[in-house]
Image (cartoon, rainbow, N blue to C red):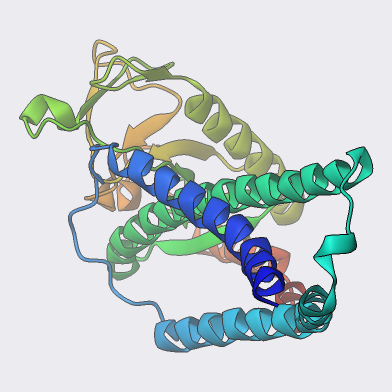
Length: 303
C-alpha cells in the first residue's frame, strides 16, 4: 500500500516539479534583464477599468473551474487504480518506457507553451501600456478641435491611433521599446535619420517606419473612397518615454517619429491649408462607420 501511495505521489509530483522548476528558471532569466520601461508618467484609468479587471478575474476563474471539471474524473480514476494495483506483478518493458517518454514529452510541451504564452502576454502588456500612454497624451487635442480615434480596424491590421487635424490626418503606430540599464541622458535618446531608428544599445530598426508608411497609404485610399476626395495622411511612429533626435539635416521626413508627450503640433496648420469643417465631419463619419457594431463587438469578445 505504501508503494502504491508513493508511486501515485511521484506521478503527480514529478510533472509538477518539472513545470514549476521550468517557470522559476524562466522567471530568474527574465529578472536578469535590467532594461527599464520608458514610461514614467501616470496612466489614468479608462472608463470601466475596474469592471474590465473584474471580468478578467472571473473569466480566469471560470477557465480554471472548467479545466478542473474535465480533469478531476481521469485523475481520481488513475489514483484509485494506482492504489489498488499489485506492483509485484507488474513487469516493465520497452512499451512501458514509451508511455513514460510520452508523458515527459507532454510535460515538456506544456512547459514550453506556458513560457511562450507568458512571454507573449508580457510583451502585449508592455505594448498596451505604451498605447494607453499615447492615447492619454492625445486627449490634449480635444480642446483644439482634434478628432481622435483609437485602435482603428483595417483589413488585416489595426491602426493604433488616428487624429483628424486641421489640415491633414495622422496615422499613428505606437511602439514600446525598453531603455538600457544606464540612467544617463544618452540612454533615453533615439536618433532618426528619416529611414531608420538608432537606439543607444546600437540596435537599429526600419520596420516601424515602413509599417507606419504602409498604414498611412492604406488609410489615405480608404478615406478617399469614403469621403469622395483626396485626403493627405501623415504617418507617425510614437515612441513614448524616449527623446527622439532627428539627424536628417532639417528636412522633414515623410514619416514622423515622436514620443507624443506634446502632440499639439497635430492641431496646428503647418501641414498645409486647413480642411473645411464639412470635410472633417465626412472623414469622422467614414472612420466611425468602419468600427464594428455592438453585436459584432460582443460576438468577437465572447466567440
